[in-house]
Length: 224
Figure 1 (cartoon, rainbow, N blue to C red):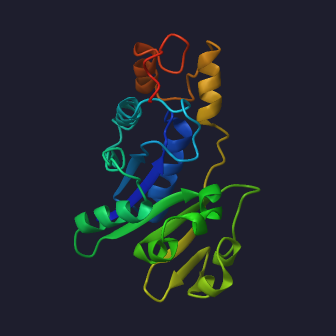
Figure 2 (figure 1 turned 180 degrees about the horizontal axis):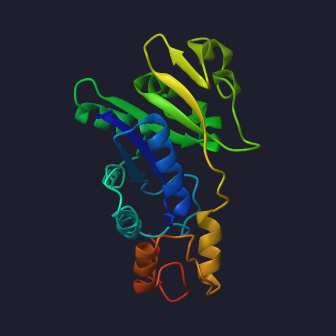
Figure 3 (figure 1 turned 180 degrees about the vertical axis):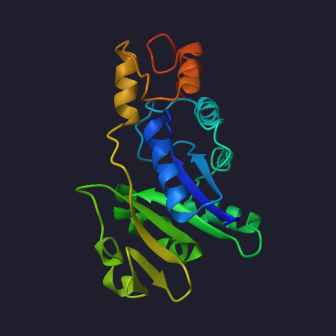
């Protein structure tokens, strides 16, 4: 089906095989025509100096997805000078969505667990379909696991992990392959001079090596 667009946000610091694999599994399971990776500017939960410059993360993401025509990278959140909220990002993509198109916001269970802390979250949830990637030990079974019962009652169980609002927006709990790969572990390996081959796509490895990222020899790489 065309015009079924998935959005996958994250710091991608750096992007790795786990990000690409879950995006591919969601794309296949939901028959998405495209998955758009959206690097965040400076996520509020990150410690100062932990995240490298925005242009580096964008460049590595673009290199990592270059062999998959169903993947794309957007700089929508990195271009904003003020705070970047999911509400504004969804508005942007909804404006660009062709008639009859559908938008799927992809997130992990940790992010879903914090959904009620999001800016104007009650307005955000009906805007598009939300896809919660479930992993062993961190799975959700129903909307009420992460939001107040009064709001969760707006959803109706459609079966097979799908819940739907009367407005049409669905909440989809989708199992994905539990690849235990983390950007923080990759950064640790790089600082220690270790190999990250088969954890990070080769083109992205070439870029980070070229620019000396995540190592002690790249003092200019950290974003102020």
